[in-house]
Image (cartoon, rainbow, N blue to C red; front, side, top):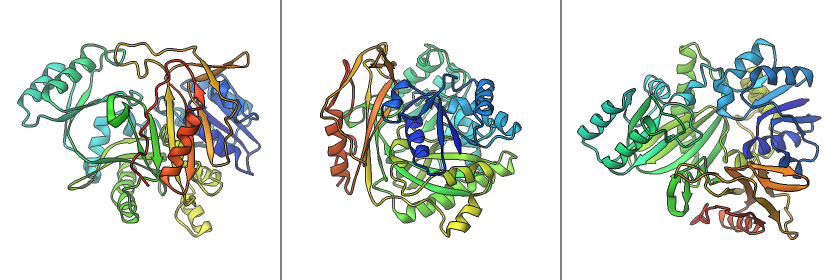
Length: 436
């Protein structure tokens, strides 16, 4: 089979690696990818079509006789690439443009959750900054969460510990172009306290399989300080999730969401990624994404203990139940190991504090750097220029290490990080700390 991966970051590098492991795959193509991916995947074919250029990606898939396409970024999904590929009888993993609204619109996701009776935080939505500010003023609560309604690459959420912080967030989003342009639609959510967990299901419109859990570290600095980012590191599986919790997630989150989406005439296929919080009153869903997470993919896929291609293929074909029946189990096998992933980001990242994200710094890797079969280097914002690696901005790269314990996996990951150097490098030193 020939597989096309759409996207250019660490997530797409990890998917490309996983597809390349399959004995059923003869070629892996990534577009637009990044030239540094070939450092660890020399046979990878890199094309230059942008992830949101659906028409050109379709031409590429037809020209290359692609058998299966896997979409990485949310922007590609919300631009309708799945609809276009399906109209042309091409197999693709992902939701339709309408179904991807679960990620593209926080307000839409909230309304679906309420109809599906999926537990979530209370909320109010606003299209006017002054009305939002009035709501904050009159609220009984000091703490709240302000979210912009559209896609914001993980930067459209501000957790506010006071009314003043909430006011600043509303003004920043709606009046001061905090995300590069003014946002016209926000929601203000009830503040929940607890541990956050990411949970993933692979869906085909009718059935689904549970893929695993992870804990992402969103804030830029240690001890969850600093601005929100797309994710500075992650570990898997989530230490606080039990088998009973997974059963609850399947029965009370994924199944009702899929049922409700079908009822609305928008059957959900592809990845349904639930951001959950374990509160004192039980689990609640914070939001949904409609694709694999970044950096969660970089721990989930290495932990798979079988060829993952048949599962992705079953998602695209609507045959998950059939595959489960053939294999006589409900989900892919996973290794009895822990995985820790540490992100190294460029100077100025995430670019929300008035500092420009820097590009063009040389990335040097020590000669002692030697990955074992249980360790991985995933490239994101890097490019190879005249045999030299240069930063391209944002999250530059990440290291994943697996071991029997979180402690050992974490120690290995940081040992590799210490052997990679570029000016202005930012990384957290507390990913997965405190876990045995």
